Length: 89
Image (cartoon, rainbow, N blue to C red; front, side):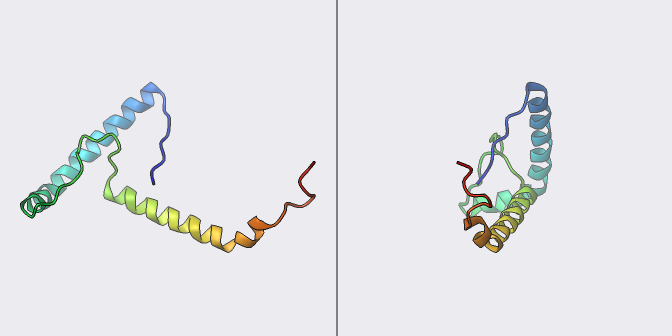
C-alpha cells in the first residue's frame, strides 16, 4: 500500500530530482543483479516509473505498518468503547 502526497511545483521538481538520483545510484548497484535476473527470465519494474521506491523505503514501510498494526491490536478494546460523555447529541 502506497500513499500519495500532493506537493507544490517546486517541491515536486526537487522530489523528482531526488528520485532520479536515488534510482541512478540503485541502478549502478543492481546492474549485475538485473543482468542475472534477465538471464533467468525475471523482469523488474521500469526504472522510469513515477512510483519508484527503493528497497530501504519499502522495508521502512513494512516496519511502520507492522508497528501500527500492533498498536491497533493492543488498543482494539478501547477503540470499540463508546467515548466518554456519550455521542454528544
